Length: 91
Image (cartoon, rainbow, N blue to C red; front, side):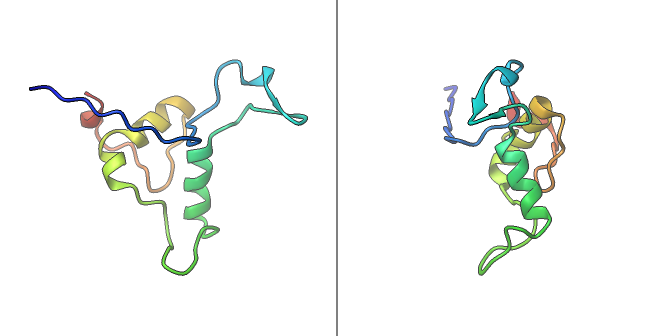
């Protein structure tokens, strides 16, 4: 039997929409929106290090399902710790 899983990661954006420049947060347009990419960059640069957490963002299961590949496709960013790997999880 074929199964499908829907995983909702609320507020974990992976790239801005084509019309992002039309939407604003106060006076700042949403162009460049990429929450997951920015989190991955902060982790890799040590800005997210603390007690019990250090180094690049590590989401091995989600990455195996294609999260890194989706991030790269949506934003063009190869985020540290979320290397695209293989597209197996996308099928």
